[in-house]
Image (tube, rainbow, N blue to C red; front, side, top):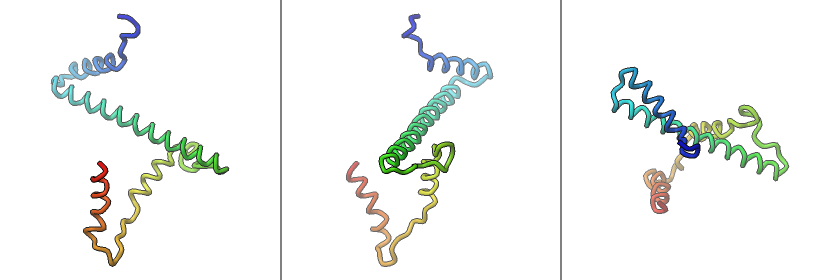
Length: 116
C-alpha cells in the first residue's frame, strides 16, 4: 500500500466496526451507528468552522472599525456565535396588533420558498 492510498477514515471505521462486532452488535446496527457517528463528526466540523468564521469576521470588522470586537464570551470571544444563537432562539416573536396574523407569519416562508 502506497502512502497516498492510506485512508485514515477507513482505518478508524474498520477499527470501530471490529470493536462493535466483537461486542455482539449486529451488522445492521453497526452500520447505523457508524453512519450516525459520521454525521455527528461532519456536523460538528461544520459547526466549528461556522463558529470560527463568524468570530474571525467579527474580529476583522472590529479591527477595521477600530473596536475590540467580541471578547467577553469564552476565551477571546470564541463562544460569541453560540451566545448570539441562544439570544436569537429566546427572542420574543411579536406580531403587530392590527396585522393579519396569518399573512404576517406566512410572508417570510413564501418569500423564501419563491427564492428556493
